Amino acid sequence: MLEMVEGVLSGADRPSNTVKVDSMRIKVPGGYIDDIVRPLWGQSVRATVQHQPGTKVPVLIDVESLDVL
Image 1 (cartoon, rainbow, N blue to C red):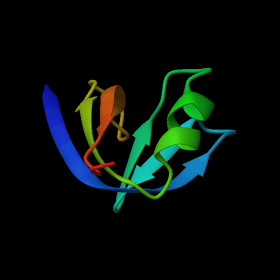
Image 2: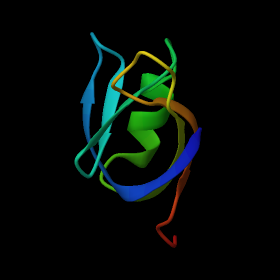
Image 3: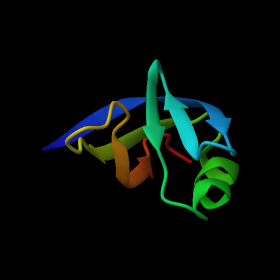
């Protein structure tokens, strides 16, 4: 099941490969955390996540900035 989450990218934990968008923790595929966190830190984002059976933390499918440059 896919879900859209909107909020500020405000947290990251490299050891567990998770980021935080508002209050939701999201698992990021290995190796992509730096690619996401550096350019989008502190910005409003829209993340597409997928909930997988047997897991509590959804997995990131796509993320885009909502901030106007």
